[in-house]
Image (cartoon, rainbow over all chains, first blue to last red; front, side):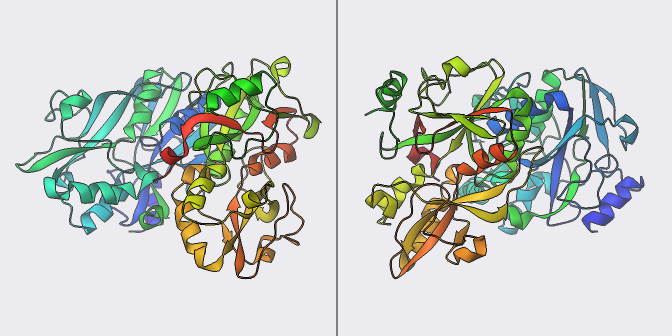
Length: 255
Length: 255
């Protein structure tokens, strides 16, 4: 399936499932939509926290067609959305055209799906992909750098990596700065304030086998957590795992 | 001289000269100060044009002490400023405390001085340094990606590099993405719309000797040019060559 076909299927309500593994080779993005009066502070939050919040594209108020996906419409072309009011989840609809306002600014933020492809190609096993579950994600004790009303903990995703492959995993993902880049932490999950790896805050738990280390990458859920902690009067995001699929190629993000 | 000493001397009016070559090893930054109501658009302009506008730090309205220079005051600690109203230069004072307003947002933007040190250390000659003049800068025919009211041409700095050292110069500066990174163009200045290398738009002309190619890097004057083209009602910048000297080390920006 091409990104155009996937977006069309989402627009017509024929695709409402997660997007992991679809449109191989294409960049998928987190969506964060905030009112104009919070846009400077949110962009500044991203600038100050580039590892969890690598900005792929910003659409100014009044725009819904990204440059990275000509013909697309951010109001309809994701499989599922989340709508928050005052920091509370109020709906999880398949489109948000009826909620859209002229003052909404949209942010597309890089996603680790982009670096999983080169990891797998290099022979680094990905447990959550093998098991067909969502990657486990954890709130940490590391604060982000606040910006105006936006603040909150760094959220990380975790992949168990065989000890001998940890350096390779660091080097490969380090080439993909626009999609979280190198890990932020290797092993020793207690030092991140994670009490129990078997109980992730988001996503699904995965087994860590003998000889593997848990490796942690900054995660695109971080800006969502900050938007909720700030009790923003109104915002729209993608639903977890239901990403916006762009026309960009993962390979173009590496260096 | 340490950065603290240089900033103190600037604050007391004892240093009003350019800062090239002072406080060796420390990051120097372009300053751009805009009213709050233009801050989102300007930060977005930087996000869309990361090569000419690599953001080192943003100070929100009401703040004048950067995290990259504790104890400093952006209103007094640069050797010289430029003040613009409606896109016109109206003053070039040694301090701007009397013009400061509570709604001003300050941007510190990376400067190529930071990558000249590792270039020189690797044996790449720098003509403008040898000659004790300002680096030559040119408006090009390449547009920047506009953001709201901000738009304008890419401005580049030029260094003549011996042909055999061009790859090395590309590789070294490519490691310094926060200070413009790799060049945007090598040789063939006509393709950039530069009519005559002997007549730069900013800075001083330098000789290009037989066997050398002109190599062009994105330049921190680009955001200033965009601010002027946008006829911003009010903004403050550093005066050319009179940079803000931070406590950051150039070496910390490389990778």
